[in-house]
Length: 260
Length: 115
Image 1 (cartoon, rainbow over the protein chains, first blue to last red):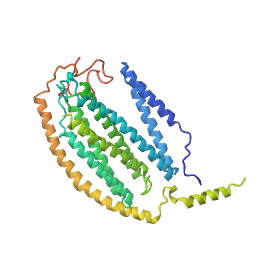
Image 2 (spheres, chains in turn brown, green):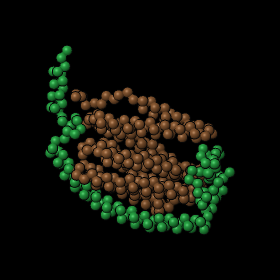
Image 3 (cartoon, rainbow over the protein chains, first blue to last red):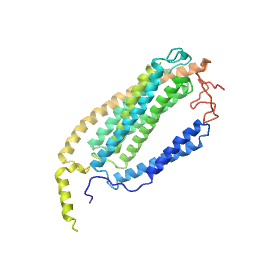
Image 4 (cartoon, each protein chain N blue to C red):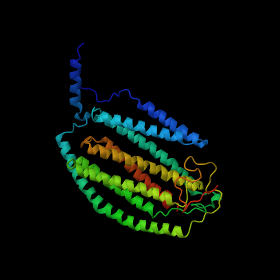
């Protein structure tokens, strides 16, 4: 029996492999900016996704089969995740800053207007409004899933409600693609296109990650990895999803409604 | 070297301080209380999910997508006018994808290639 509540981790290749993949990704982006092709970026993104997946596979094994996730370890992971969310808030803060810096006092070259002369904005009460409803709905269904997991009487109910959440998230992603395809401007259309796609694109990436997180949680629920009192992976997926949801509300107000 | 006393002291101290150091060690009463609370919450959010979100998304989905399709149809008849402002379609280097001339979500209906 282990007499201390901490988890002494074993040696693992994933921290160094993930670091090298991240550095490769960064260097590849710099190479592309210098006119090289994107082959190196494709390879490093594949190796990044692969090393992250294998690392998290190890974490799942540590929590389930090896039982290393005691309450103290869980609290450490939770604090780490909340700090990660904090850093995400500041990433989004910088994009919102760029948008507001360009939009509040538009440059004279843009006609002193926002959206600038020659750019037709996306109608905020079309697909963006529908996307707002979809994300708010997914927030409700994921709460249902969490309560039914704690209630611990009907696994089917948890699976159905989480599946509904993932369905809403997937429809959101598809609608966002549709909107990008029919948007009358692109990311090369001056500062407007730049900040618009930086903001909504960064959010769309977070939706993809959050949706993957929820899909992993669904798989783990089906495989009985979680119990009523021990479902940290699911809880963190929910926290992340609510974060993505709140960011969308701000995006909708500042990038779509205000800028149209 | 005898480790037994130390082990016993450690084990006793864990039992004394908190059972919850190990995750599944909630008391029976605590589990029942949590279940009762979650059962109410689950019912409320189930009703909201089924009777509010699904009809709302379906109605707005049909209405707004109909508008959107009309807009796209309209685009086919009256193609977008591309103003020749120099801050639009800024393209100094080829993109690292496709033929290098078209943006990532290029749609000939609404976008234009500037050489």
